[in-house]
Length: 438
Image (cartoon, rainbow, N blue to C red; front, side, top):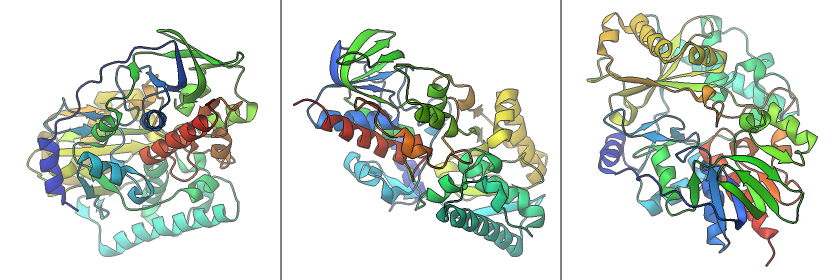
């Protein structure tokens, strides 16, 4: 396994895929796929491999969904959305990366903790990591017993000044929601494993997997009609029909009626869309040359401070000068509403608070995401509300044996991950193929 410096060198030497040539929209296909994120790409690969026809309809002018690598703002590729390959061994991505010649490196799993202007003591670090472990264990035990309540009810006592940070680490940082909006049952079912990083960026890797697929970008789907002998899709590029349809749009887009279904989705699936709403997870990217704060490559940095106003830093990403300052939950939503300048200012003020006034002068170029305001996405990733821990099973159920919903929100254990979305695209495609006429 290469080290992070090797990965950075590989990233700089790797050319990102060029823009995909937009496919034309045919009048009829075996399988129509809505959305060119990980699930849509996986579904298309599976359908094409089976020798059946398909088209992927993507409303945006790019592919990747919440997994996109920017190669223009900084001197190195930069992931604006998904960055870590979570639980790599549970996904097909390591094998696919080997086939494509894309290097993987293990992500740094060590954390550092700052209390004001000093690094935390060993005892404070132990309290922090022990608090997360105890909290997670309590949530998983509740889920094992079938208890589906707010994760906040399982919060351990006795954490003192570290309680708010533990709550941030488990809730907004891991789930994109505050703890009173996290289902114990859903959380308990999530799978963990070793995380990895892609040379050249996660979004660039996903784009490689999409090469050669029939993807029509800039084509929005307004209505899906299942009343006829074949499913009809009304799009901004005209009408087409298909024997089966796989919809990979986010739960928030579907819940607000971004696509009209005729007849409507079953009531329990409509409810599940709301129960699996997207959390908020946003990234502020700071370019800080020269590593003045002596971070390790890909070091996770946490700050002890009261309340919800905090960030998690991923420092010197891939050995570069980039620092990711990630926010989640209600505080991330407040930041997005305040705008990009406010997001950058808060990240800079946190560095000044910790390292001194010179920290602000060390920052060069910056950028901040706004996934919450993105009309084609609407947030970070799905997280079940309390009482909705079984909704993923409902959402992945076929509708009339001709329509499937697929994405990270429908994976029972790898929700919130690109790998989970990819596996769900493959699963939906397999089920759709099984029902196609010979």
